[in-house]
Length: 132
Image (cartoon, one colour):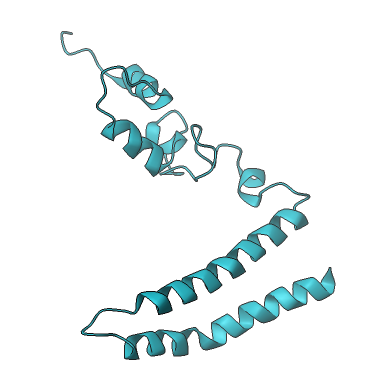
């Protein structure tokens, strides 16, 4: 594993050393102020690949458990279980402290009459009666 970790850190070092040059190359390739989509995609995919490999290695080092889950079991959305909560600084009994921004937005945007999700239930529990 040491050789694999060194290779991962070497890749990170190369990215760090060349990111400024890559940004300058993208700026130089602008067409009328518009960045080239293919260049953006290439850089984004390279960064995503490195990030994915680093996160996978962190999970391996942490005995297979995602580091974010090891630090706090409520760090991920209670609905999708994939994204971090929108506001980790908020109490876990609030929508922002329990659900990710995407799930909250999907709930708020769904205007179907029969729509229901855990976010609605939590919001109703927090509502103050208007006739009091």
